[in-house]
Amino acid sequence: MTQTKKPDWGKRIERAIDLAERHSSAAEVLAFYRRILEFQQALYDGISSRPAPSSDGSFRERLDVDAAMRQLPALLSLVQKSGPSKLASQAAEINRTSSEQQRRMLADFRAGGDDAGPSSFFARVLFQPYAEYLAAVPAAQLA
Image 1: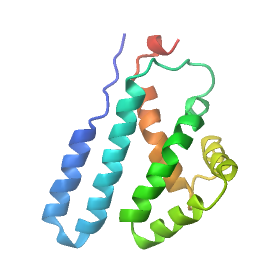
Image 2: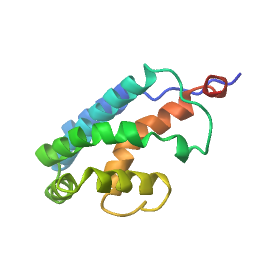
Image 3: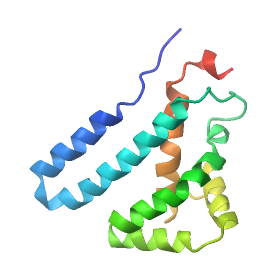
Image 4: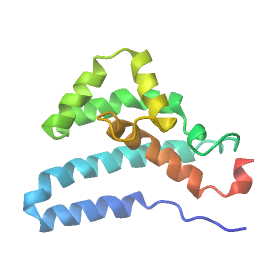
């Protein structure tokens, strides 16, 4: 059985810190990236502590919209507080939409609909840890 390497969130965070220290002109955006990585690490840790999901459906279909919905308010808050101004404005705009619209945004992204729209950043941040978990779990555990 082939075992896939699990993501090393700590290494990614350390890299962002190192780059911020060496490139002061990019320090602000790298500090924000570090916060996003820390958020994603917490998501991954929560996902990986639960039983592996079933392997029914395509890879994208196994991305958990319900779990993403539960984490969306925290992500929107993080981006509004420490994100670049344009992204913070987009977070505020999404925050003002109904939960049905937010769910549709995530479901549309999962279905492959809006990979380049303004909301894709938020869906990518939320789904990446889940996708990396699915990729890291041996297929036998997903049965």
